[in-house]
Length: 352
Image 1 (cartoon, rainbow, N blue to C red):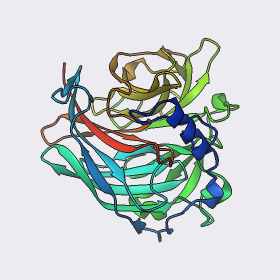
Image 2: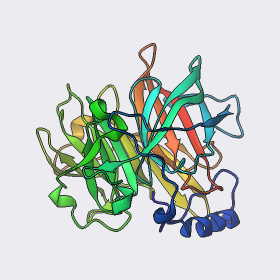
Image 3: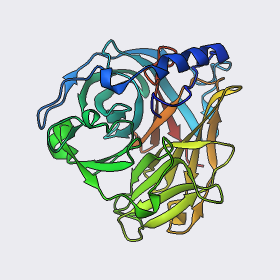
Image 4: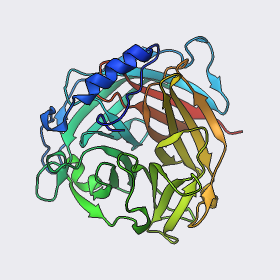
């Protein structure tokens, strides 16, 4: 979600007045006047930044001892802050392993780092660095107006990023060149042309080896709907490219997606209303159901509202934990507003 042209999502405990204040604050922000981290040399790691972490001891505010939420078990969370002016607006995430991650911000910046654990509980971020995304000409993507980078996925060293503002997908040779890799455009799915402004590409998921859709890139829009009200999505590349739909329920929009270790697709969804505030949801889609022309749906794993430690949840990653368990990592986009938070939450996805 961009920091421009959208209603902001209030943090826990904020009412209508606070949300309105955030709207005013965000509405005057302009990418042209933004603080930008130093560009990285090819193969470099970017500009080192310090990130402070405050522990989130419980997920449900009114029930501090509760850790089980349906098939999810809360491992812990942290609220993140930094004095670096480019920090914030985190809108997509991939976990490279159990600790190292690569994230993108709304303003076309990379954020890399390592999650520090106390046992299985996340307690901090180390080795954090930021760098602007670069084009093949060496200019930053933001300088050419390619901001609102909302989606990221990785497969075998290749990173794809979705840019909602201009409806583009770009690829980076990240494994070889790091944050200094230049962006190379990927052909846009023909059936997704003419997407509504600020409701376009919101999630990408690369399908790994071993899946019937191996090699495909799953592209999901935020709220570009077909005539039946389903969310438009596409398979790019792979054995069966084409358009498909995702059933939309209860006014939730897709904000991110990832392919789980067992092969299914997991959606992170969010909803905002002025009366009830922000909510988030995780929904599992069987990968076998995804095919051109199909409309897919699946079970909801969790729904959380402002009674829980959430904010504008936009980023989702998955990795395999030390005992073989599936671990989910969620992060929020604070829209660069002092009224919102950057939170990192982790859950174990339990076998049922």
